[in-house]
Length: 191
Image 1: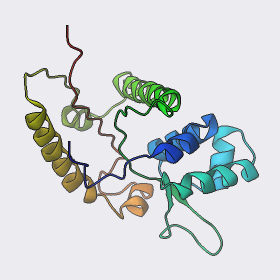
Image 2: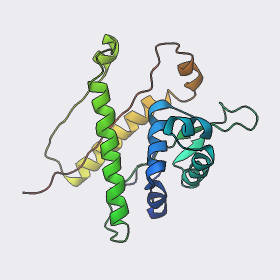
Image 3: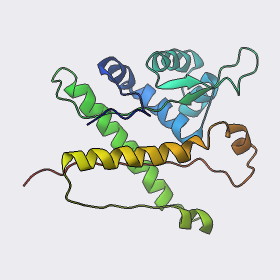
Image 4: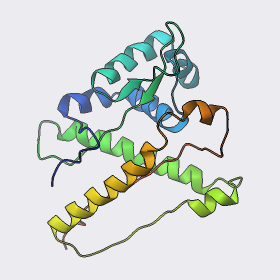
């Protein structure tokens, strides 16, 4: 399948850097809560600022976090979660790290979705706007690749509209909320 143009792909070095438990937790906080400084991350995670600062730099080296220059003042550095894709590989050398990373990502996805589904205070407009869907179809590999590209284009088009809205979100204006999109398109195991 062609590489999705929108998302950088994690290579072996990036996977190894990302697989650290604190880095995974930091990425999750940045993804769920939005940009933060090393100090804010340290407070949220019960760590010290030197630790979170070090791990942010490691994540930055691989594009897993990026500095949000629109939020920083002076020497203050704000970080946001980067965007990436990860595909199953046949590389036996990275298989254990890849398996651990995928497991952590699936656990985070399940916990995030469960938190939404358990939220009894959700406003009706957000409940109506949300979607949890599972579809099974019979396709060729080429059809699956085409569908994935088209869906990725739609996701990119809609999520790019949110770029630069962090300040408005923090001011809680215009009915904005941070949203999460999970999309997986893959073949089921053969019987």
